[in-house]
Image (cartoon, rainbow, N blue to C red; front, top):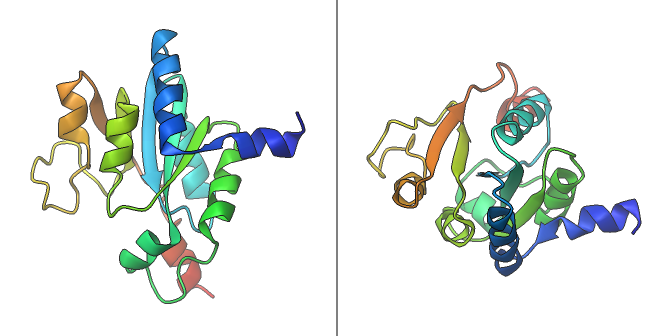
Length: 169
């Protein structure tokens, strides 16, 4: 298999993600899940993904599709990169095992299909918040707790955000 084919194979459908998660569970591998837009990959993203991957055996990353990025009102002309390009860049990272593109407002359906052991979000979220209307609430946390999983945050890398980097231009 060529290196490009290997990267392409890491971008999977939701159905394939559910199957892969089940295979990993059968091998007693801890499944970590995170999600985001990952529009312009930067040091903050790399640090975050490496730390998330270190918390388990397999890292699943759900990427917002183009329409859901626009719905998040990240800014004019966003996303910069189309969804498949963002997914492929993430898949090229050694710390990322599987990439899923999702179209809903939240990754809840993806989380329910994968049933991760751990949901990880950046430090702008709060694992202690239980009110789903609070913007710091981690989607899927309650559901993960029901099957024995959990959620936690990783500190953000100061000075690195796509919005901040774009504002510098």
